[in-house]
Image: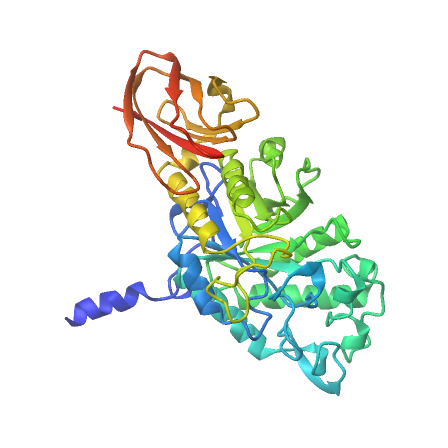
Length: 464
């Protein structure tokens, strides 16, 4: 009995107590990841980045909800940037803490006057309570198999955001930050840069014991005056800080909204993130880099499920490595993701969409996806008018296909000879149609889909 209890207790040990390599690019296929010894892609429906900096947010129920759906990613901001309750029209925004409830890397001073309640910050002193909460969050995520993207910085889109930042001279006692918001994340102001570099070194050092995280340099640096030279400087600081670590943490860089061809990438960057990346052109345009490509934020398509479900299917079936849906149903008081979204919310989320994205995760998990490549060329016809087809293929062994649009298809696929089993999946309901086997002589094979509404997926496996 004692041995059984001991073994059970060992399975509950957090990842920090086991010597493990942090999540990194898969050595055989660097378009995907290797995490705790398993090929991995990252799929989630996650809250609006305030889980650590918002002292009122109870993050364990949130992480439990992600785990219940098999999701394995969450994204957090560090507290150097926050929003006000009116920002972007978000109701109950977790990035807009109540007055006096912001937690950030720096300790409060004895001087009153912070713009959102409480004392000003002392940029020369760290807040131990913040780092305890940060480490607890990463630890609890790791216990649930969830990877944390730590987004270190964010541009100040409007004066309202800059007016709340600890780096603003009005909010600290150090006389630092008397600059325009569009010059904060640049190399123009040595005093601000020194504070930023010290914060990066502190966070990277504090989190060095974990395996379930990576660092994004800056959220949406294509706004607010953020310069590429500054981004590369932050990447260099991360690399310098972790020189003595057993293994380095991955670095991500946010490239663009939609798609863009990446020019002169920093050699330390492993993951290139895009927002609102539909159609998923960013994957093919940057395939030559042989790095992971992520769809790291959704939104601005209303609150219905369909746009965000189809975004996820298209991006991952195009060969993407990350789908991070921004789920506005996670709020203070609804940390389990049950907040009913008002029609004014700038994005979707909630239990129904999470179940649909769980179907996507389960569909891909049934393949050796790390052995697959985009292969739209095998579709020779039969796609309904106005519809699109996305294909991943393991040569001669398996095909994952997603159709967006139409109501029924007569697909013509070029496949090698063999015994193939076809299984259709309805992404909205998760319903699976009874598999059908085909003895194929090679060349073009016609597959009739069942009737569907909006989208459908196909799993094709060649049997010995």
